Image (tube, rainbow, N blue to C red):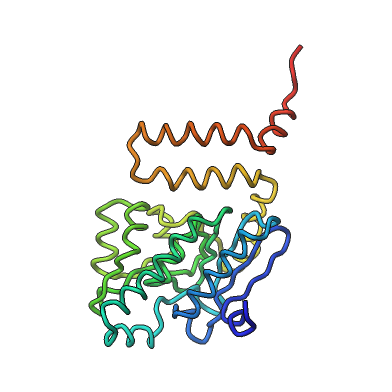
Length: 257
């Protein structure tokens, strides 16, 4: 990544955990073309680093991500159909990439995670939130649609609640999001950073190959029939048996006389 790009997304690896930080605090880390492109580069970089066992995605300043920035919203009003399609697909590719990253990607959400920013958090494998964090999809209030985010939302909460969230555009608290199973855990603001670190360290001692295979299979099962899901599971089972981690793990079991 260039120095210019590195400033908009910070990247650090410590103790086998990659920390990727959206770094537009003056814009509440709002998404624009350059931020999305640089974030993709950072996520791909984690896959090239064999030492990384988990990724934390966070935001600098007071918010996780407030969605698309104002200039981006203004641009779509005058853009052509093809330009708008290219722009939408860029965000779509980011959501897909998060699922393709080999290790767990953990969103550490504080402040506001709204619109595309909320979608970005929910696209991650696990979402940890500060008590004061707020989530929501206010797109309807400006005549817009949280279109791609619906694919994620429908997989996380009930149909009725998902429709309410997108149709009314209300913000909800971290506690409400946790109650809906929209996020995994809520931590107090005072020790949010340390609790995120403690949670993420749990992945350091786990098998990287097992996590990679599990993540791939987990999302691959979306939309499969029950027999199809079992078939995919059987294939992954065989692959897992052949990994070095599995062989070593089995060898540690005590043998009986």
